[in-house]
Length: 500
Image (cartoon, rainbow, N blue to C red; front, side):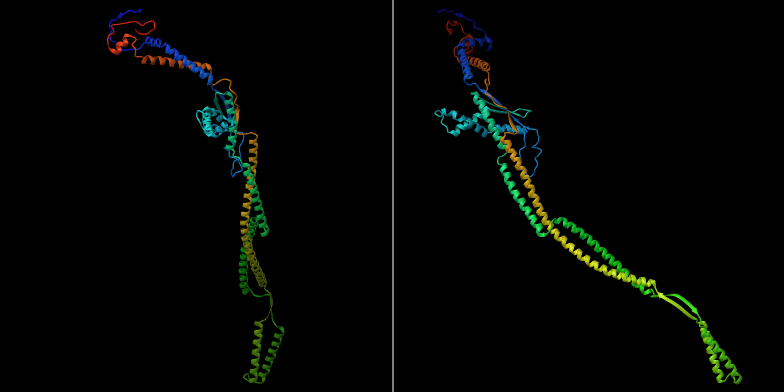
C-alpha cells in the first residue's frame, strides 16, 4: 500500500463557502454518473426526434362579402348592414369558432376514420366506439390551432400530426366540412320551398281579393266609389250653394213684392194729361137776352104798377136769379181735362206681377233644390259606405299584391342563393389549400440542441444531488464541519479514487 501519513495543523475555523474548485471536484468525483445520465438523456432526445416528429399542415380561409343571402323579412330590400364590405373582428371570430366547432371536427374524425386507428388498444384499455370517437375529437381539438390574422380578413388553421399525409388530409376534410357547415348556418336550407309555398298562397289570396273587388263593383254598380263620392260631395256643395242662393233670391223677391204692393197703394191709377178752361157763350147769350127781356118787362110794368106790385116783384126776383146765374157762370167756367193711365202705376203693377211670377218660380226652384240636395246627401252617404268597403277590398288587394311580389322576389333570391351554393360561391373561401409537409414542425438540430441542454442540466443536477446524498467524508474540512473535531492525519486517496 503506497500511502503516506500526513500530519496536519488544525486550521482556524472558517465560514463554509463553495468555490468553483469545489464544484469541479464534485463533478470530477461523479463523472461516471454524469456520463451515464448525459448519454441516457441524449439517446432519449434522439429517439423522440426520430419517432415522435410532428408535421404541421397549414390552411388559410378568406372571409369576404361576395354575395348577400336573402333574408326572411317583410321588406323587399336588403339591409345596408348586410351589404357592407367591411369585415368586423366579431365576424372573423365567429368564423374561427365555427372552424373549431365540435360537430365540424367530429364529422372530419368520422370521415377520416381516426377513431378506428385506436382499435389496437382495445386489449389494453377497453372502450366503446362513442368513447373512442370522443377521444379522437378531443385530441384533434388540441392539435388544431385556429388563429384570425390581425388587420386582415384571413384565418390561419394549422394541424399537427406524426403523419404528414394525415395532417394535410385532416385540414382538407376540415375545409370541406367547414364550407358545408357555413352554408347551413349562414343560410338555412329550405328557403326556396318556403318562399315557393308562400308565392302560391299569396297568389291564391290575390286572386280571391281581385274577385271580391270585382263582385262588389258589379253588385253596387260603382267603378271607383271614392272618386264618385268626392264628385257627389262636390255636386252636393254646389247644390247647397244654389239652394242658399235661391233662398236669398226668394227673400229678395218677397221684399220686392211687398214694396211694390205698398207703392201701388200710393200711386194713382190715372193721371191728367191736359186741362182746358173755357166759357159757354150760347148759354151766356141766352141768359143775357133773358135778363134784357126781364129788365124791359119790369120797365113796362113800372109804367103801369108800383114797385111793390106782385108782378113787379116776381120780375125783380127773376132778374136777380138771372144775374146770379150769369155771375155764377162767369165765376165757374167750363173746365175740360184729359186723363191717361199712370206709367208708374203700370210699371209697378207689371213689376209686381213679374215679382210674383219670379217668387213662384223661385219657390219651385227651392223645392227642386231641396230635393236635389237630399238626393245628393243620400247618394254621398251611400257612396261613402261603398267607398269604405271598396277601400278595405283595395287594401286587401294591395296587401295581397305586395305579399305576392315580395315572396316572388324572395323566391327568386332563394333560387339564386341555391344556385350560388351549388356553384360553391360563398362568402368564405379557402385562400390557401393544405399541402403535405415535407419537414417536421421542429428541426432535428433544434431538437438535438434542446436534448444537449436538457441532458447537461439533468446530469449536472444528478451529480450534485448524488454527491450531496453521499455520507462519506472526502476532505478534512468536511470532517471538521460535520464532527467539530480536529483532524490529526489522513491518508490520500488510492488509485481507485476511494478514500483511505
